[in-house]
Length: 120
Image 1 (cartoon, rainbow, N blue to C red):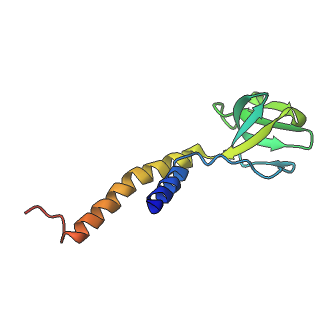
Image 2: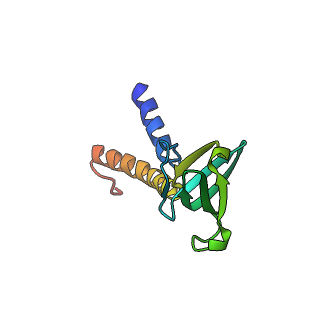
Image 3: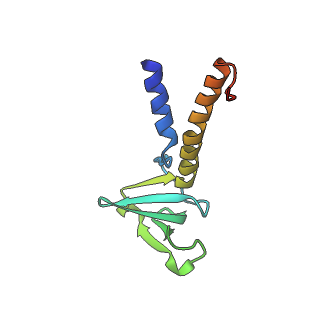
């Protein structure tokens, strides 16, 4: 039962967006497509093209194009409760890989142990 539980937990990890809280971020400009969740007073917004300075964090709302300079918004860094980085697109493809991969591996094991899967 333990191996089954462990494999289920590992599979669930692959299905998420990989949101994680980074170590304290130094002033920097993150890659333009890096998705960032900004938590403030129990609310969350998702940005990309994020720039961090010592006193502020700015970015473009995720549903706006990265090139939309007029869309950039900014918050004072002390007003931000937490920041999480993630990649939901990679999470989607990992999930697709699991949905296709697990049945394929199961079929290969079954066919290998029964002398092939050709119809009689």
